[in-house]
Each structure stands twice: as structure tokens, then as C-alpha cells.
Length: 232
Image 1: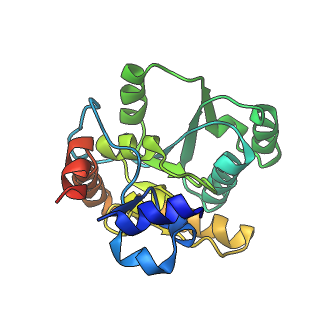
Image 2: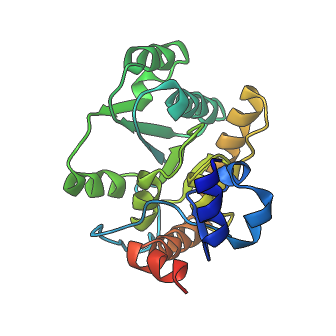
């Protein structure tokens, strides 16, 4: 920190960090004035009703939304899909997005034998994203680094429980009551197993409770509510 930065930190009544991963960047002498609040929030996005059941009996419909880049974790999502199908579960995944890794991801699906269980969608207008979420059951979002991840909040607002990694913004929103968070210090193989375990656990008779809790959490992260909490 420069002298001017330290001066502003000392004078601040409250210091807001976008996610807990940024604590290291703030001097410990001001940690007592730090609050963590994402730099994103729901605004003009329709909150859905809790799901009473999954979209299709006997099937698990997973959704990943994001750029097709290595650190976004779509490859982990495909590996998790393969693990679920190897366990005998009728899982299908929709991946919505674009990016340089598309061909590699498509090839990975073929190599793992799950190509026919994957649907690809390009980016869609926000109004159409709502319907995409409503056609799926669980968001699988194993991003390795995200400061916010608005798509996680939007999915929860439509009643989708979320399975993610304990890394950055997504883990701020997801708790054991509304989804599943996997530790970020595991091996790749262990991470995939735990992601699959989370999906399998949610896709049970507990699904309606997870859906209801997801919507409750999403309501807490409406932009107006976030600002109100910061200034309390």
C-alpha cells in the first residue's frame, strides 16, 4: 500500500471487500473494520418459486453457464457428469457459453463417453436465460476463481441449488442448506468425486428443501438489500 492508500484505510469507518480471498491484501491492523460483500447483486431479475420436484423423474439436469476457459471449470463439470453416469445416474448437462476451450471440452466429452449427454448453448439474452434455468435442476459451477459469479445468484433465484468450489464469490452464496461447496485443497480426482457426491445428495427427496433455501438466499443478495446491510 502507498502512503495515501494507508491514509484512506485508517480513516475509513468500514472497508468492504468483494470476497474473503482478498483479506490478505488488507493490513491486519484494519481487519476489525472489514466487511465482506460481493460487488454484484440481483437487480431486475425475476425471483422464481421453490421447486416441488426436479424437472423429470429419474433424471438429473445439470447446467453450467460461463466462458469456456480453463479456470472457469467447465472441464471439471464434464468430468463430474461422467462420474455421475458411471455411478448409474441418468444425468444430463447443458453448457451455455462460448470460449477458446470449446473444442477441447467437446473432445473431453467424447473421450469420457458422455458426448450424447451434453447439450451446448450459445450466450442468450437475459430474458431467455430464465427459461434455460427453469429447464434444469442443479447448477454445477466448479470455477477455480471468480470474484462474484452473477450466474450463481441468478440460478439460485430460479430455485436451482448450486454445487461449487470453495473459491471466491460462489462460495459466499452457497451453504450446506442450499447447495454443496467442495474444499479447494483436494486433488483433481478427489474434487471430481466430491462434486459428484454433492450433486447426488441434492438430487434426492431433499431437493425441494434445497430449492426453497436457494430462493431465500437469493433474496438476501438483491442489490438494495446488500447496500442496506453495508450502511447499517
